[in-house]
Length: 634
Image 1 (cartoon, rainbow, N blue to C red):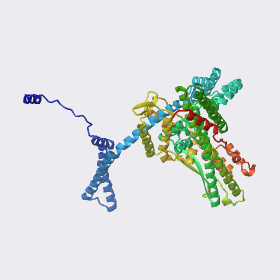
Image 2: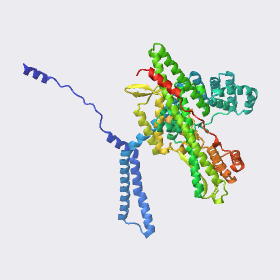
Image 3: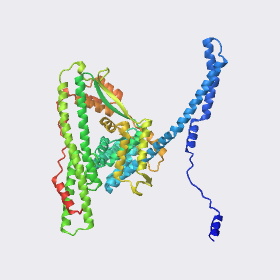
Image 4: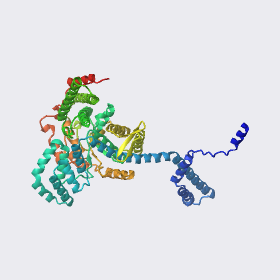
C-alpha cells in the first residue's frame, strides 16, 4: 500500500517553477551606451579620411618639397598604418573611458537636474512654511509684501496687494492708476496723483511704518512709480550667512530664522545655475610699518563687524523663535527694528513668560491639577528653558562685542598716531597706478562644473537619506515607516546641509565671503511657480543669474568710505576717476566722501558709540523655571 502511494505521488506531473531575477546585463548596457556616445561610425570615417587622402597628400607634398622627389611606397604605407592604428587606439581608449566614467557623468548631470528641481520646490515650501506660523493678520500683510515685490504684477494685482496690506481700497485704486501710468510712461499724471493724494498717502504710510517698516518702504516705491526690475534683483539680508554658520558652529539651529533658511536655499539655487557673485577687497604693498598697521586695522575692523553681526543676529534669532511659539507678537519685532528696541521687547516678553509661569504654578498648588494644566505648565517651562539658553547666547555675544570694540578703539588710535605724522611720499597710501600702494582686489564667488556636480550630489544624497518627498503641495519626510510633514526644524537642518555642501568650494566661513555675498542682490525668483518641471526651473535659474546686473558701484563707494574714514587715505582726483570709470561709482557720492577727510573735519569717530547692552539673565526667570520643575512630576 505504501509503495502504491509512493508510485502515485511520483506519477503526478511536476509543476513548472519560474525563477524571477534581474537580468545581469548592466555591463553590456554600459558598453552599448559608451559606443553610442562615441559615435563609432563618424570616428571611423574621420580616421579613414585622415589616414587616406590627408596623410598621402601631406606626406607627398612635404617630402617632395624637402627632398625634391616623391616618397617611397614603404614610407607612405608606414605613415598610413601609423595614422590608422593611432586613431583606432584613441577610439578604443575613448570607448573604455566612457564605459567606466561616462555613467558616473550621466548620474552627476541627473543629480544636478534633481537638485535644481528640489531646491526650487523647497524655496516655495519654506516661504509658505514661514508664513504658516504667523497670525492671520500678519500673514496677510507678509503675503501682500511678497506680491508687491513681483516684477510682473498687474495693476489689479497692485490694487489687491495694497488693500491686503493697508485695508484701504481707495489707496489700492490710486496705486493701480499709478502703475498703469507707469507702464505707459505718463509720469506727469503720476505727479498729478501725488499732488492730489500726497497728504493722505503720507498719513497711511506713517501708520504702516510703525508696525511694518519694510512693507512701508516697498509701498512707497510703488507710490513713486518705481516697480521692481529683474536687473536689480532682490536685496539680501547682509548677515544671513553669519547666522547660518553660527548655527553650525554652536550646534544650535534656532540661531537662524526661516528667512535665513530661504536665503540659503536661494543662494544654492543661484550658484548651481551658474551665478557669479563679485566681491571687492583691497591690499597694500609698501613700507612694512604701514602694511603691518593696515593689516592689523583691517583685521580689527573685520572682527568687530563679525562680532557686532553675531550679537545682533543672536537677539534677532531669539525674537524670531518667540514669535514662532506665540510668545511674542510679530508686530512687536518687525523686520528693520533696531537692536536697542529689540532687546527691550525681548526682555519684556521673557518677564511676561516668567510671570505667566508663576501664576500657573500657583494655580496648580491651590487647585486640583488636571492633565491639561500640567501640559500647559510643561510646555511653558520648556519654552522658558529654551528662551533662557538663547538669551544667554545673545548676552555672551554682546559681551564679546564690547571686548572687540575696545580692541578696535586701541587699534584705531595706534593707526591714527602712525598716519598723523608727516610721512614721505613713499609711505603715503595712494590709490592709482604703480606696483606699490593700495590695490583693489576683485574676486568672484562661483561654482565650476565639477564643484556644481559635487554640491548637487551632496544635496541629493541628503534628500534621499531623509526620504524627503513632495506630495501635492507639501514636503514630507519618512521616519520609522511613517510620513511626517516638513517642519521648521527640518528646514533649518536642510539649510545647514546646504551650507556644508557649499563650504568646501566657496568658503562660506570666511568673513570676506560672507560680507561679499551679503552686499550683493539675489536673483529674482518671483517667476518660480509650483508645478514647474525641472528643465523649466533650470532655464529660469540660468536666465535670472545672467539677468542680474553685476553692479559694483555700491561696493566701490563703501570701499572708498572705509578707506577715507578709517584709514585716512586721500581720495585723489585720479582715484575718483578710477572708481567712476571702472566700477560705476556715483561722482557726487565720492565727492562727499573725499570732503569728509579726517584732516578737514573734527576727530569724532563713530567707534566711540557703544553697542547695545543686553543685561544679564534675570534671577526671577531662573526662579520661575525652578518652581515650575518642582511642581511638575518627574
